[in-house]
Length: 264
Length: 264
Picture 1 (cartoon, rainbow over the protein chains, first blue to last red):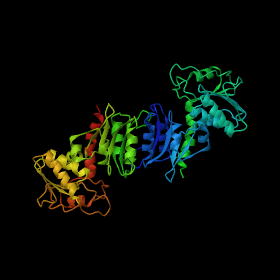
Picture 2: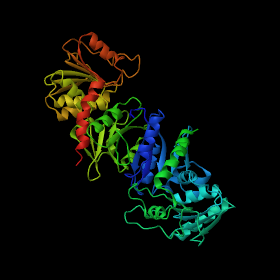
Picture 3: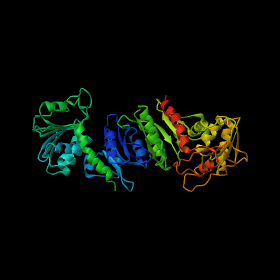
Picture 4: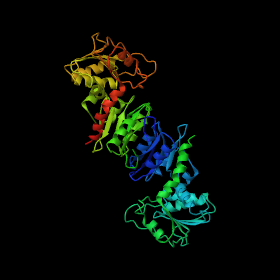
């Protein structure tokens, strides 16, 4: 790849950003498709987020943004239009500039997990246990419900946040039984969408219940393959099927690329 | 070169930017020196310049900026500290973030011409004729005076701008005779620092006077080598020595790289 004055810009904004894989992945994707564009990482604290967003969106040659932790909820305010799932989740991880100069926001965090999970198993009729009801957790819950999950148990230390997500899901999806806190049932799918596991030495995000060869375990936390999260190690020891953070991110690439390409 | 989450950012901000060579040149320079950094072009209109600057400078992984037309004067307001030549010129084309988070501005436009010109001839004792007293012209005039030019004739349709530059130069450099408008003298050095020549079909920026094999002619305008400016064509036809916009930009690279590297 080469950068020149005509190179179109994309940025992933977050804090920290040194660990993000999107710059390498999307820049390679653009090059493979002969698109003169790069994605760079843009580190902005909570305090500087608004200023940074306004500045990036003011650049005439910047066509899209990815938003990562801790800015996915704050980024909502920068979208002129939102997808339905972004509205349910109350957060976005992608923004694109439309031909008319307006910005559309969408949330692909759930898409990544579901597309990776569907390579292993169907979602329809399954009972899910989900740790973490922040942006990533809400996105995954919405996508699971949209794909016909029978039930979702939401676990989050912030009970209000979990209840709010339960209400949003219940309003949108009739057929999915959403509860807050571990429902004691056996779960077909166990997913960690909390930050537990990011730090070396972190344990499990909560009680995963009974996990065996027929359980699908997902963990959004991005870790080097050699040092997986405690949940991923636990799941593998139990013989469960595993979807790692890397695999979820891989599942997002095609969907987000299509989103960026589809600007009106 | 590869881009990842740890890649440090530099940007050149201007309008338009599709023609700028800095992204390719500096990105290649970083790669050659095993520095994980890229330079991208950032297009911002006059209306969006302040917002764009605040946003770019808010990014924790952005270490420096180049500023090109039409923003070199407006960029001055974003520097916490300025080099002497930037003060004389009243414009900057580079900003770097210091270790303490403050920003230092400098102006290298004159450095590029003088370093390219010095490969051909000395500056000391020479009589110069300069078209254009904007940022680039002021920078070249200051650098010529600092290198011992005997006289500089300033030509600009905006006479106030030319007079202001004359006064700033006279205050700083005793030994250099600075006049406004063509002084009728024979000039050793003729430089175009105006925008005349950017558009196809542009003529000369003004009367260059007598130009021959002993004259050094410079033109800041960047044109494809196959279609040089009218002034460059005129100079070559007259057998003069020529410094093109490309050569001036080449002369800036080392100086600006050292500036970026030298953040306290």
